[in-house]
Image (cartoon, rainbow, N blue to C red):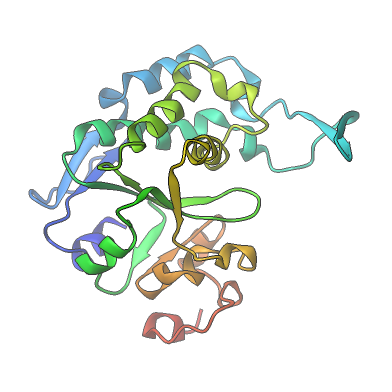
Length: 258
């Protein structure tokens, strides 16, 4: 992601690169490296606090539940949903980087981008501005179950964004996330966004509804005009699959064979 970011993003936009266990590439003025553990002591505290907690690692899955109208009845079997949904420690690395970056930057907007992405076309400042409407507290890729958080924009000039981020961080620092149905970052992001919306905040859907019918929502949104996201086992192939696309894409990148 780093190389293609430097190649295709405006020079005015720096990359705050949070790293752990490797030496980041040096590119003064474009890349601002931060050792994740050194800059995020609350992450180290969270990991230490739950080092022996199987619930925090997705090792003790919740009971399945039978829903009958307003009733939710526990069943004597564990859920078969993916364990990643309850792996709080895994996704805490991502969220604490966001919390630190939001405090550190003086920019108008903070964009989180997953590392398993590739940019294949230039990204203009006008495009970035379109992703962050002035009246939005945050912009994401909405889906019916939970949002895709491989690309999220936080509007740091919006009066409600700081409270949203504070409540998001408190999920971890106060261990409040264990009261939620799932513990991964996307589910918790949606929880705090719904609270913000209840206070009148607007959360912009970058996908413009595509998440209702596209399982791989990022590449089927406007973001697919300039980037790919190698989610899950797509990392092995080095790109998304042809059958991930449900919208017509004319960009040269998508015309290449898998």
